[in-house]
Length: 254
Image (tube, rainbow, N blue to C red; front, side, top):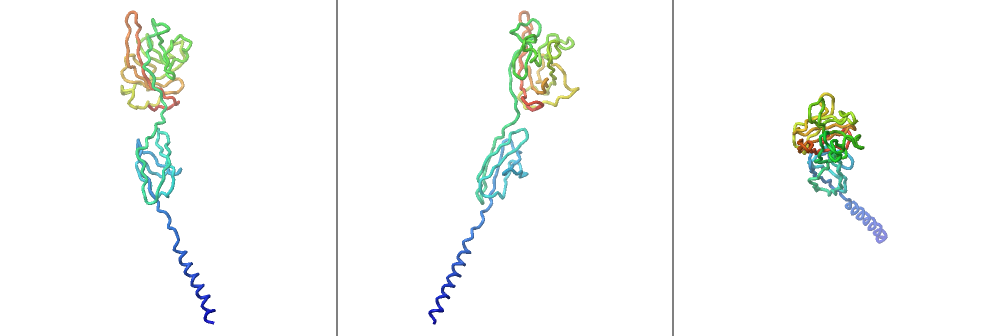
């Protein structure tokens, strides 16, 4: 009888031992990690997996789950920049000096030489198409593309002026001018917004500052007279101009 009773007791004890051992196999959850990000320029919004963290570069995003994450940097006047990063629990993943690319779409033209309207030939064009960078004669087949031209008489007989095409009875395109405060075409200064009363329709052919232009199609340009010459017997007066043309309508950034 003693042997018969002993067997089930031993079996039950074995079950208890097995059950206790299985409770000790529970896996602890992984610790969160962090991401440290810097950008050039700084001040970009940091978005994590499509959600705005409300933090800007440079900064550290904390309590990020372990694994692969998508980070997007957003900054006004720059393209969004997205990249993937692996995060390890308890560690900080570091991404530094992400270079942001400007979304300003400009084309630099010139120097292009245009000539005074009097005494010039077909090979010495007076007009300029700002969008293409081409110089055209104001009586040529391309005259309707001319935005500005180098006038001998100028508006109101004021002499040699670079002025809006529509001031010539044979041309149709209107361009507004506003002289800037600087002389370095590459200083990054944006154009003022075009409005009435502060813009004119011409500049002197000896203007040394750059000038902002607003053309017939609503595009802004930033132009500078970089050289001039001629105006003597046998050589008509000329100016050389260089300019940025903003390819986006109503975008005044440079």
